[in-house]
Length: 232
Image (cartoon, rainbow, N blue to C red; front, side, top):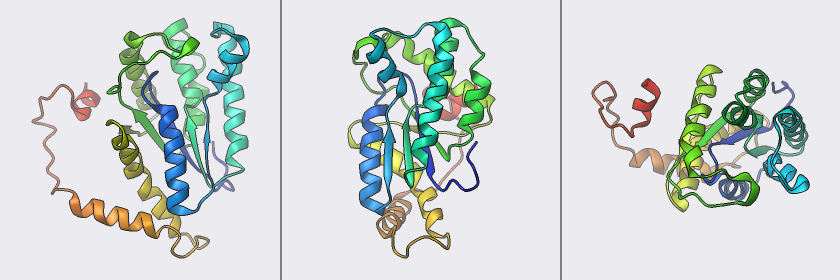
């Protein structure tokens, strides 16, 4: 869990393989740094480093060590910046342990750590699958992994925002989810005056473009609808 003295805003990028997490993490870090002047850091996925160092994928008994090292890297990085964007968290290691090895033992600790994040962004499956060395199992695993991530988050009582769209739309969706959190930070006594002026203008423009909201989920029968998926 995040300590009371930890002022870093923690953002988690979660999702199945080949859904744009790494690219989004880098783009998001750059966009936020330019818009706010804050120290923004993106932390790469530790599993990628592990696979490169060992020239193979992990065995079941190695999953816990990978999750622990990843958690330690997140804690260390959070002490060095104002905004930390994590290209996955130990929750993904726990989910893949479930999926690949039928091992649920990592999930409780992963969910405890996940509660320390301020925002969970879940990348949608609308990008084409692309091979990426040892880490990718194939497009057939994306749907079950996506479902497993959602189940884990719901099990932990954790909310999330889905990030979808091609090219710049993905970044825009992520910024739409993050902006309200950053504007709350401006209200703190220690926030620099005018630091988030660009984000404020962006939020006002977006709100002016939004149509009047009508709740129709009880009548919705579109299978692709996010709310329908959650109700099931």
